[in-house]
Image (cartoon, rainbow over all chains, first blue to last red; front, side):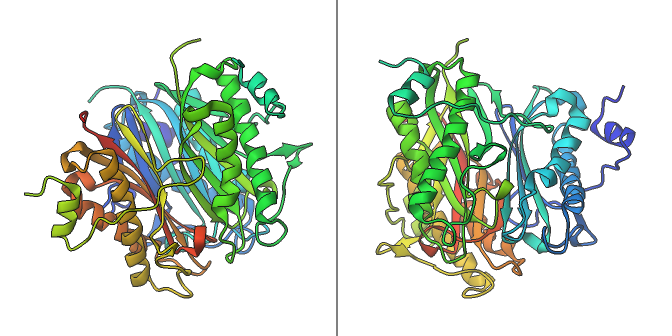
Length: 158
Length: 158
Length: 158
């Protein structure tokens, strides 16, 4: 049984690749009490958005699902960094916000957001089930198609 | 005096009608400590958005107010489900996020969001007064006009 | 050394000017435990948005930075009001949400959001470093260009 987040992801066929660390006056995550707030993440590759474009125009819902999954891998990177990569330090994923760059005619934001939700439950099981808000926005940093932020409840520990 | 959320809503002329339960890998609400995080809700009727359209185009601010009220009834359904329908289990409505599908020329998002705020205060009194963020987004799931999410502080209890 | 938020801002060349108090059924901030949730703020002058317009059309990133800074001054007003203006009551700025009214072609939301982040760190030092989500929305109340909301951890005290 996997006891690290990275090993669990590997067993699911995903690599835990380093997500960018903010170079501005904010940080990737802040812990307050047992709650960990993770900054909004987009998938980045070689300094550019991994899945650029807008849902309903350049991308369809299945491609958006992949983009949400990719952004969630960055969320998981920061969870791993904050928990010393220990899977069991995550008691519960509390809330996930999924911002989808979309045309005003696009309506399948939930299908896109499932790319985040499915990966979180694959990694954490029932503890990965979260409250969620999924909305369609005008644009995202670097022209990304999906941004994911999260609040996670942690077990006490090193 | 009403002691259940459903009776209080009935006294206000509203029926507490079942809101949809997520069929994906997320849940309607998550409690962490005494905080209850409720997923973003839209009004749904017969599988479709109850108030579809975009503010500033198909809908005006008064219709948006109704849509926000309707979405908040779904929020209240999930609060009721998490509190065994007990009005006094809600110590405080902490934060409400109101996402309004709007044109880029629409500016009356606060008037729309008041449909959520007014109902919460009608139900919970001073405990219903909350911090709020109201913004205009490009599009919402199912073509809904308003989505409402909430964080609520609960009293301990069954 | 400045021990009040207003004096610290003055030392940075900013005046702490009264932000609007909601006239609807919500409030500027809600404290739950040691967390203070502050409502989404826009800069307001004489009843109108201080920095109206949309990024990528009427405003460029530098003007957006100023708008984000201005909205954050309103956030700081409400933090000051909740803490009796005591700088050291703020243990940590936990999360900041920055909503940027933008065209769908605009990609510099992080640069805009830095107007919020830079001011918070200038005021609170390392305690001002926060988790952040920055997204581009269709429109904001009163036609504002930037809205900023925050969650802050407080030290116990009067």
